[in-house]
Length: 348
Image (cartoon, rainbow, N blue to C red; front, side, top):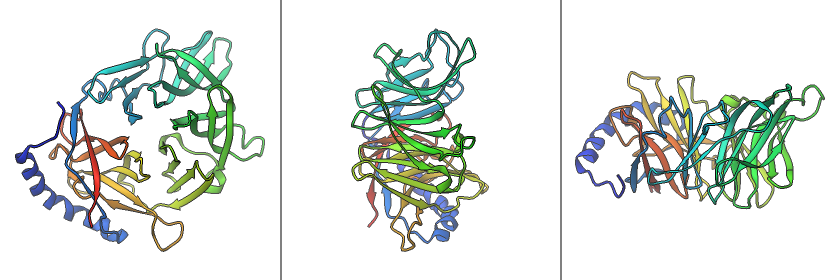
């Protein structure tokens, strides 16, 4: 199922439903005093991914460098822990992450490079009890080909940039014991090891970063980190080596970010799940850093992306990532297995 969506009945229903949704979210928008600057265009295409979006089999999924990447956590020597799907829904490749003399292997983060090769981070415990944190690049047959041991640094999330290097977000497990900075962002060359370590967690108000509430996103010019507990968005500009930090507004305890994407043009977009009201709402929000108060940022709702879960199939339930400047997201239908591609336009 591909091609331009031209279902006038569905769009008519959506227009009627949005008249209900917008007032429900108006309190959120008013509190931040940020009228929407963006409109979500009609989807360019849609694709069903029944196997890939099965949470029971694949708890982690995101769109990365033209591919839908899904993975589990506990690896086995004889079965794939990673699957990669194309935009047509077809399985492109699988990955098995295992090492000689390993007793257990866990996978923490997965990305693909521009050629489609899979890069995974995780930890391996050997049969003699030795622990190794690692980043590995799989060959085209789906097995580890180039591996870096990162101990005592624990790489929880990884992303690849156009220069062929890999960025990781994680913790130095020995930082506190040795009274040294916990540098959470690191760049690696798969053939040469670590290139640099940046951003002390304590400078952001944390001793360490929580793997359950951290996000790492990249494009070819920026590496971005979102830390939910301290409400910080951090950008590292690869071209200028400059780091910028913004404080984010509090979403509240009953709203949560379900997906994050950094577009080719540099817009940061999040999908938010809101169950603070009688009807659960979902939608997309763009981060605006152009506030008069230096270091403050706000979320702006994207008109046309908001909807009531299970009632509006094309409402943006979960943002998987960006495909250039197109946003790739799971629709709000009851099946939860339809992915949409749509771009944003200025509302002005």
